[in-house]
Length: 305
Length: 238
Image (cartoon, chains in turn cyan, green):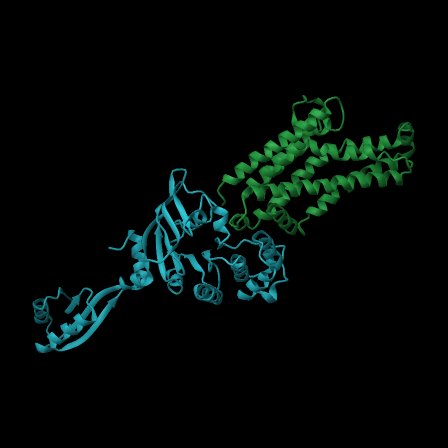
């Protein structure tokens, strides 16, 4: 059974003039995990996140955060949430410290917290400069700093690495990965890049045209990557008969034996039987789809078969 | 208190945005205009207003106050709103644990405070100009304060409307053209029926229905503010 859920949505729907942006979304995010929210651009990720933050109203369905109804206890919930939605928000004419001060006064946290979060995102040296002169990466880090300002228990980051250079992406990724261990924060991070999520998240939710098409651990997704075992032998026709006799469901393709998902013990047994019946086994290989292939398959077909 | 804290963040946000400049420019402009007027035709005007020279100065300033106020309101609201629209800060601000009512009403409070500062500067400027023009030391303080602040009450409905337009539509052309239209229309206030809000800044000054105009302005201003807040609280944030 899953541990305590931090975010749970039930049949979340958002329609704009008849066009459905998000439909029947059931998001489940457990405490202490990094949840990767994945989907192509325009799939409804940002719309969902805006609903989680109370920025837009769902057409239908409910959002529960920390086990409370967002509609009824919005301010109590938001007090415990830090967020960064799409491209960063900032007041360009103000310095980083002044920007954070405008947020700090509303959150009513001690002033020392500003230095702490600037240190976490390594902006201390630049903190007295007007933000409009910052690089995109620095602005994004400032956004994360203000998300962290109120000591949130839940961090919602929408495309936090969008538009960053590889070094910037690396930095943000490290920052996010630390959150659960070092600060005990649950993180929801969205992206349109699987590679991005794969390196941070423990659980993924894949959304396509507003519908959730996959929601499970990243390991589970990886397990689906295996397409089976391929064995190359000296006499494939006879070998396949031997295998069938042993109860292995195999096929022969281009002179190679193909077996759908076998576990280690089954592979060992099969090879032993083949060798015992005097077959020369040249190669035993696992055929793998890349995660990217699976992702494309999922978002292409709307589900994993 | 949350409202006060939000208001204090608004004061931080308007730094260096030309808003304070505008607050000073309005009254200083009006005073400079009369300095020029009286400077150029000093003897003529002193003769014309010899019964009440201070009153003469006040009358010349007062005729420009309603329009200046409305223009000022238009620009202030637009500049204040732009601080948030420019880098779409709404999504950050409104995802903080603060009610949208508080955010909206704090902006209204900011507008009121800034305009009151302008009015106060106009009082000081008028007195300084009068003394500079040697109108005598028998300064009609009460009249000056009355004439500088009462039209402001008459513009409260316009302030509430302009604030709502500026905060709701990120395209400031909408609110600014509306504001300018109202400002120009207010020039012909004398011709309007008394129920037309654009006449109220003038009516609030004096005249038989002064009290009614003040009460109506407060009431309508407050109502428009509430409607704006209600809409702002429900709307989707892009």
